[in-house]
Image 1 (tube, rainbow, N blue to C red):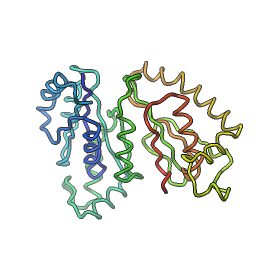
Image 2: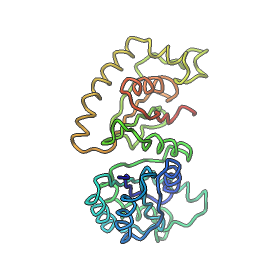
Image 3: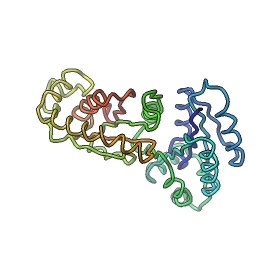
Image 4: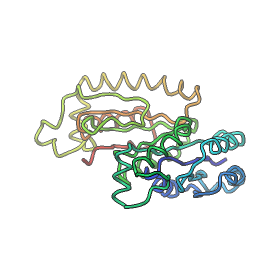
Length: 281
């Protein structure tokens, strides 16, 4: 049975990019279908061709999502198949304002000013955001990075279909990701930035990875965090969690956190790539 996803969120936060990325992954994406038809189409799609990785309904392009109606649709879908989930894309108000001003698009939520439109839409969607199974904050990501994040989260994992675990590396200098569940700080490790020949490289390069991982504190840190996640992941699965996002941070997000996240992925035997938010900054 195909997975079913309701994709919604703030106008300007990236629904179109999410839609395109899911299509690239082999999902059947249906855009702007009336809410009253979604459950019926979802039932037909789930019983249809196994060629699709999942079925995604993109809701809210008009800027007028009815929260109670959407949550009722989700309940209908869940009654038919447990895999029905809500993905909510979000971004800080100042980022949304900048995006709308940059494109000169009119915000679909009617209000006297752009700021009022965003505030009104946010208030109206709060109950959906609270109920969402996965919230992705796009405030600090560009279009290509958001596509990579969707690929990293929704690439099929045959060994563990009950919960998707994703890893994110980041730099504290650029802010902590707002859409992660667990955050680990590796700034206590010696920083390759201060070694001239390593500075232009990243944690994806072997000399930097070797420098970081051969430190005894790094091994201690990895051992403790991997042991923690080894028993926490099944516990989260038991509680019915669908997505778990784990972030590892260093100062700039280019060296230590990247190397540590890659090694964590290897030790936890996660099949998907790590999302390195700040490695190219």
